[in-house]
Image (cartoon, rainbow, N blue to C red; front, side, top):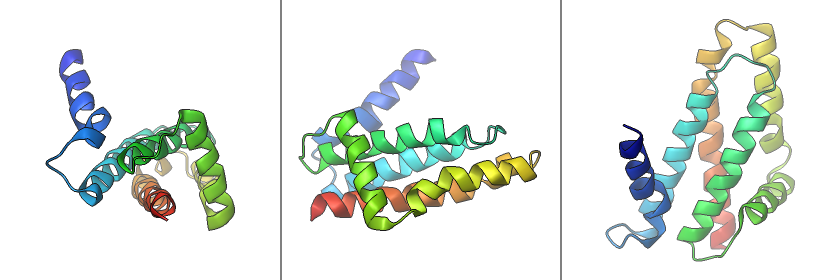
Length: 137
């Protein structure tokens, strides 16, 4: 089972930049949807403010994978810097996500884990699209 998951990650995430059967836009959307789903799945955990330590690194890693698709060499540290630059360009909305989720989970601890899934998916999708647009410019 572990090998199957590893093979799927290799094919769907790590090797996507080199695939020739997909256009750049298809590769971009594929990566954004994969990371959006991963972030949404991690949002189910009920601990307030723990999302910041899970979502931000995943979203920065998404930036690194998107840069590979766009042919821009970028390390994980560089992806974190890109995330910070986008935060300045797009406003505090990117950085407010973990804070809003933490407050939401603090006030509604039993149902917030499940109800935050669409919020996190949508926010990560928007962040991915902004990163892609930023790298295309």
